[in-house]
Amino acid sequence: MTITIVPRHAPSIQPDDVWLKIGDWLQRHQATIRIVQWTMVLVYCVLLIVPVFLPLPDRAVYLWTNFTRFAQFIFWGVWWPLVLLTTALVGRIWCGILCPEGAITEFASGRGRGRAIPRWLMWPGWPTLAFACTTLYGQMTSVYQYPAPTLLILGGSTLAAALIGLLYGRNKRVWCRYLCPVSGVFGLLAKLAPLHFRVDPPLWQLSQLSGTKPKAINCAPLVPIRTMRGASDCHMCGRCSGFRGAIRLARRSPNHEIVHVAGAAKPWETILIVFGLMGLAVGAFQWSVSPWFVYAKQWMAEWLIENGATWPLEATAPWWVLTNYPQKNDVMTLLDGALLIAYLLAAALACGATTLSLLALAARSLGPWRTQRFHHLAQSLIPLAGAGVFLGLSGLTVSQLRSDGIVLPFVDLLRLATLAMATFWSGVLCWQMTGTYSQQPARRVLALSLVGLAMTPAVAGWVLLFWIW
Ligand code: SF4
Image (cartoon, rainbow, N blue to C red; front, side, top):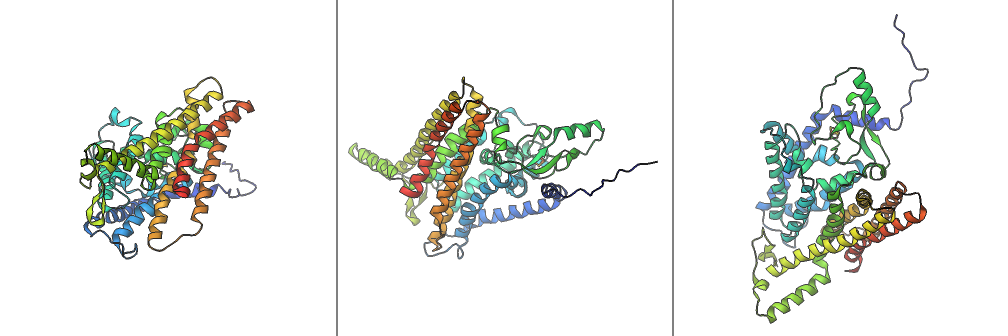
């Protein structure tokens, strides 16, 4: 005789069940996701390639009357700011569901050599280095303004992704996991997302004890799913939803991962936050309106003329080295290029070194020196670092719209609110973090004050850009 236990009350639907259902829906609709991905590939190729064959737009055109202007606006004014925002809101769903490069590299990997991933490729510094190089090179070639450098940088990255896919892994996203220039930034922002695929270890064990052997799943970005504790590497593709009855899409506190999971020392993440997002990126958005840049240029020009070396003031380089569009009256001389590189590196070093020193003092103020604690405190700066880059990119949105006569209201207020909230959020994270290291209020307040000071260079950089220059 079989006894069936029937619950007295049908289980009510918990609010969280909505997320569980969404996760399972993603798991069941991988074919639909594939269609969305290839549609994105098509749109991406059109926006990337077509403008290169069109004449450069003049001042009389608008983004709704000229395809090059439209593509520029979509890429830099809409696409990138939105990707950053959605990553912080729902994790790396962009990577798993929409990114054309991810789709291409995984497709190539399914048909390529399938070689083992070499050790050099797994070096954790690649995303940070690639981010710094593309930021610098993008400014040298004016990537936000012209279609050819956009094709060179984004298209070059896509080709590299396809090549890596053809060589390494089988149906994997080796490029996304180890090399993509923005994967470091996305990985940081995803730690803030209030949604993630949660793994329940007891349920996993229970499923193993029951002897069931579910069909293996392909996690393309090579996340060790069983031990996954954070959203940093997960592409939110949904393939593992429901696996062993132990994985589900779920809500969490946006502070949880940074305070309780991200404690392991990750020096390259610290470098990316402190020198990359809070230094180099500030310089990249700032240099073209910086009076310091103008003073330095005047001073250098006078010095060169006095010393009879005028060639750096006249010599130029091809457009793929330095901006060179005489028809648009937009040409960088070697002096411009050298000063631009120097400005960005100086911004990265000055902001980064100040921030790093204050973080070190904050870490020491919580007790005997521990490198892990120092790197953990750096993670508290992620909201401010991410918000800064978002503001910088959305500044392009605002200026592109303004040049077409569309003035967005309350922009200054929204910027101020974003910067203030991000700084406050970083402070809250830091405070919660200090509680995991010390129970002494005085030490915690001192550490918080020092981390507050560590935020000053980046905040000052954005204030100068948006409100003073
Ligand atoms: S862990 Fe892997 S398979 Fe699961 S949702 Fe994330 S990327 Fe997809």
